[in-house]
Image 1 (cartoon, rainbow over the protein chains, first blue to last red):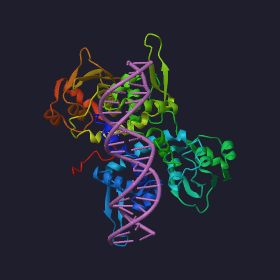
Image 2 (cartoon, rainbow over the protein chains, first blue to last red):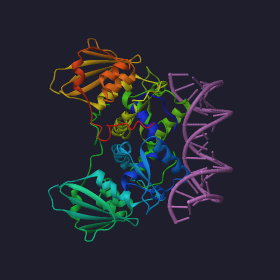
Image 3 (tube, protein in one colour):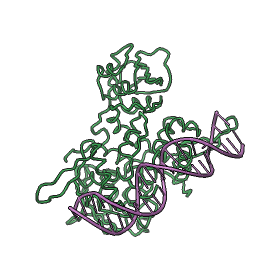
Length: 222
Length: 222
DNA sequence: CCGGATCCCCAGGGATACTG
DNA sequence: CAGTATCCCTGGGGATCCGG
């Protein structure tokens, strides 16, 4: 990306990470850990291979990722975030929190993946009853599945299926994530095709983080 | 910007705000408040007028800013952030914090403005002695000046000059901001041309916020 | 099949001139 | 002052091709 040529840390951040696809590559590496080229390609539906290749080189040369040749059994290059790249997590979280407000509109063609199902509750909800008993919630959306584990006041998520979940939410992504993120209520989610199976009371434990000014304490003085 | 077509809040955020210049327009409106076209142009050195015009229309139509015809005395349109636009503040803060690490390299051609001098200490430093007496620090860099006011554990900044500052920092932007942000120490800042006048002890009250990941070693690879 | 490289085409961005 | 209009060029999208 052409530099903005401004001595401002926001502008310099965008000089490095403002290119198209760059932050999404960081998202995938952050959510998935070290990835092969093909893993990244799969996690970034719509990216052209040449562009992914270009970006990876740029990211490596600007120090956000490292490329290493994996040990013999794999025999393929692995890309992973450097310290600098990992430090983008707060940026991705802030961006993702802000972007929640746009998750309500339907866009039929959108791709969807399990890791995007998993990060949302981990980053954008808290356990309203941190001293409550451990619980397991199974999420299923568009064939992708993830598991939320409530334990010790912390929210963990992982991909895949749980053996014996306390609660199962199944439906289109908009219904599942819309409900979890507080964009829609249970009734609306039902109308969008959500099925809820098990201990519904657990839903009240997942509290969406305040969206107004979750990170910033702005006076709203304007 | 062409949509990423991914049902992920980060991708949707970038669909709306990921275009070139968009976040910098938000930065200016956030730092300066309501702006006329020319104010924005001045705050965004390097932007082409057609592009600014295009972006403003896009931002208005996506609900991030509002355009209103100012009252008679001014007789010109004012652009300002909507609630949605204001909510970008945490994103800009996170981005700016991350971008600090790139402020050390010199780039002689970079533009510089007073409002970028002001936001850095406000966002990225804390008062290490919150119960200490009020103090006023004058910053001057590249002809741009801003004032830091320490009071009640809070850090306020404003543009311009203070009548009787307790401390004056003057030098190239890289020296002033590098010192404040903890990128360089006082001695290095002096070598870069910083002059310090007044109560140097106040410097220890300005504590750069923790850069959670990787403030440590620059790889210095480049 | 994986990990890209090459090619072509078009949309988006940059610079500047011009107008209400 | 507040934009439009124009021209040019780069960068991104899409498909295909190639070496391992």
